[in-house]
Length: 142
Image (cartoon, rainbow, N blue to C red; front, top):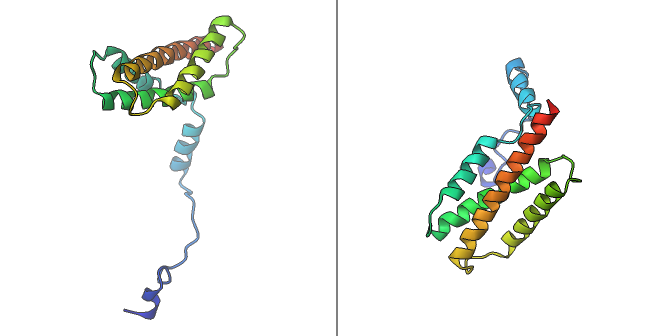
């Protein structure tokens, strides 16, 4: 063993980071950054469909996983939505979404399974409504 190997990291050669100069790679990166639909509506729709198709009694671990996914989808939709919240129905949908997300913070493994199941279904319904709202906004922009 050499003396340099006794000190961790001293035998590594220092290299400055290099960035790609390949035009195809740069074009793919720019296209990914400038795409029209940064939200994956297919994944969101699949998760919502999976949650709403569940029959009682699903396993609690499965409910927790789907709830976590729906929570992430709903948070993404809320941050990406830049529409008009002056309409009463839209404002009510926003309130429901924020209440459900706040309710998610209070749930833990000791929460009864039926309550967790109902929260999952409520998140799925609200997420589906937000997807419809985004579709309506997208359609009116064109």
